[in-house]
Length: 71
Ligand code: SF4
Image 1 (cartoon, rainbow, N blue to C red):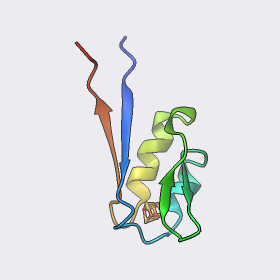
Image 2: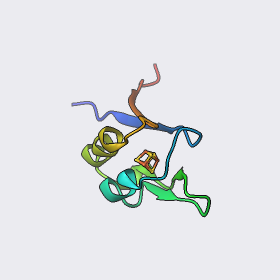
Image 3: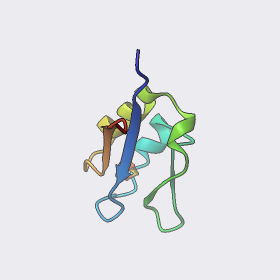
Image 4: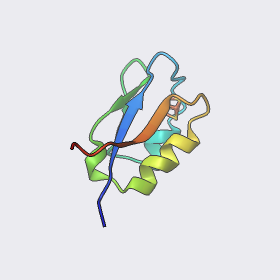
């Protein structure tokens, strides 16, 4: 089975600082002093937590997608 790598993108301009993603995937996301999301390290948390963080965002500021394997 091929292990997929998830790509995580955040839109800090859309983020309203709810903190849901930080609750779902601590270690992957954090809030800056300005109260917007920043990515810490998405490789240290389970894929399910990243997907839960994406789903929990009230403004859809997190996009998790599968990274295409390089040929
Ligand atoms: S869940 Fe969405 S709105 Fe809330 S802090 Fe994370 S990115 Fe921002």
